Amino acid sequence: MNSIEKIIVTIAPTGSASQWQKTPYLPITPQQIADQAVDAYEQGAAVAHIHVRDPETKAPNPNVDLYREALERIRDRCDMIVQLTTGGGGPYGVSFEQRMCALDLYPEFASLNVATMTFGDGVFLNPPADVERAAALMLKRGIKPEVECYDVGHIALAQRLIERGLLSMPLRISLVLGVVGGIPATAGHLLHMMDSLPPNCRPNVISVGKQQFPMLVLGMNHGADVRVGMEDNIYLSKAVLAKSNAELVSKIVRIAKELGKEVATPSEARSILGLKDNSKPLPSQP
Ligand code: ZN
Image 1: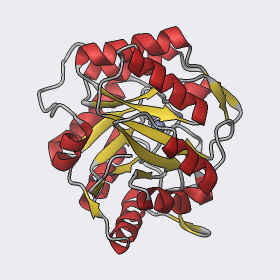
Image 2: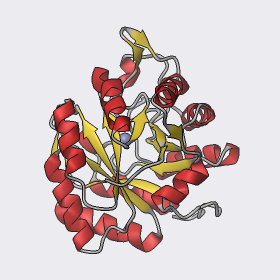
Image 3: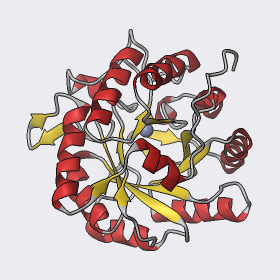
Image 4: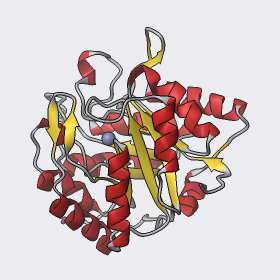
């Protein structure tokens, strides 16, 4: 593994699950999502992983206008890296094509899911030919992918994309634990996934539910980046709901500092992740 000097903290403010039924604090509209992302930035998050929701129904809705509004509202207020999801709505019947609409905004960073899997009660469809097409499109548009791996075998699929020249280095790979249908959140599984990464790949640990903080602490101790946020976990501590995403960032930053880690600024994170600083205006026509 690379020797890593700084930890990059990502905030995932809303996700695409039905969290709004479980917490009143989940941001729903692009304005609320942007506000919580910027508050999280002020607590130390360098990256915002953005899903969008239908403001009326609160359901996930990968819609280019909603993405554009969230992206612009964050960019207007701070220099944090905005990573648009291309996975949002996947388990909820939205087509692969529609999920890719975020790429029309030329974000500097976007997630890329490489495997079809059971995801909770749904099926997350990522057929190999579509994944290759999405990776090629990101490469052509200068959008850096972050590959999401929900199991060890997914890392091998990422490796295959690397060998086909569809992913450029350096590459961040998220190791996602605890999703129903993916690898369970245990220390052994996380360390095995970290040991399975291809060279030049930087791990980012994501863990859903109550194992979030234990997995993130283990990851940080082995040099990984970390993601917090209500997409993955709505609790600040046992039975205590996080009142904001910033609270979750504040907690992980406090732990990181106790462990002797430094938290990367957005510009440090851009350099570590090999991102183009995409501060140009958004295209008005996708
Ligand atoms: Zn996501």
